[in-house]
Image (cartoon, rainbow, N blue to C red; front, side):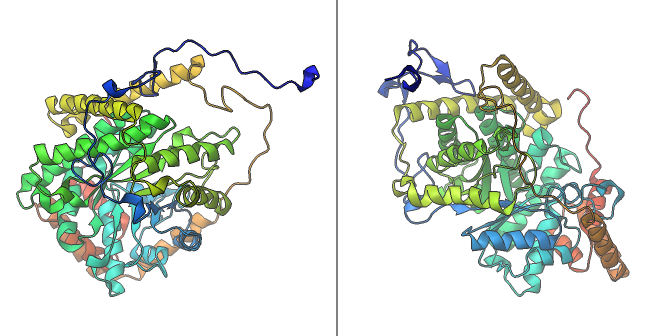
Length: 538
């Protein structure tokens, strides 16, 4: 064989040594039965380590819920229908920055952001257009919005009411996790305490009026995207959940058994495959113990942690973007092996722009190939009993518990946030990550290793320049045609509920029905509850 045709030889094997996961957990060269001490039990039984349901994907696949939202409500509605035609079975809505921050499209602070990173929704007419021809009682809907979540939920309930659909038939989730906003994502209106009050109002209201609706999705995703480790993501997410449960129980109207089954969770799925599978399994077991031992839940249903997951946006690279298809596939497989109930797979071009129809279809097909071709959904918890997985699961749970205990010592999550504790922990983790990358210890293929000199630019989705003006004019026309006296009276009822301890949701539904906007209601929150600013030491 000519020298030029000889196969490449692999590097000589190195001596076995102890390594760590991306999050710093011990990763031995070989695990054995001595490394996993916890009994793993059976799927569908407390504490749900192996999955919340006995048959898991054998009887029902996870919900494929691709995140979608850009431009006008009509633009996003068109994308919804495209995804449903491609086999998606749940909707997930991204809103633009003005909507997320509680400003109407015609507000001066909205300039340059209308419809840019999500769909623009200011009025109930926008919400009607967004869900045009969508059967709200047949398709579950997720909405990623937080400080203005109460208003958006009121609008969703109002359009169902207009269509004659009972709220009891509505299924879905609104993110509404304000504590993680103060920790990581930084989109807020008011300080933590009144923000938690609004979340608790929504939990109570939905428990009574919309029993199939999850009033909060307690979200570790954004905590992880900000630079947290897997352990920090899990610990801070469950600590946020503890704070919400404590607030609802403090009111004395509901028990943990009354609303525990309506709490939803949302996790990131990163590149460290084994660690991510173990994290999702540990989350279920730790939360089940918290609900039963800390909050006295007696019903298994109230202790089951159900989760949505999304592949890690922070791992997507602008360099060699097609490599992102491989990253997303591995992360999606980890999510499925970890036992998620719904999943979003990122599109390979999302680090450059909002995804095109072509790229979002590849992302959806990734889930469908895993579901239909890989065979992993034919066995419940196929990695259960793996020495490595069980050892990592135990380690993650132990380390997360230590964080939760520290937060308890600080007076709970609201106090810990005011002290800057989780924020600083995440910042230090992100800094250590950057140092490892700069030193070449953390390889990112195509970025600091296996690079190429030139790359052909991708065709990306571009938002038309004139979209903003068209949406602004639409909102202005809507405001001009309303019953102004009715709007003012409805806003005063919202204000009265805000200054008292009355539940905000009933007056909110009434307010959006008569034409009150996202910005107008958010202004009441600013007036009554005040506006939050990050502490200077952060």
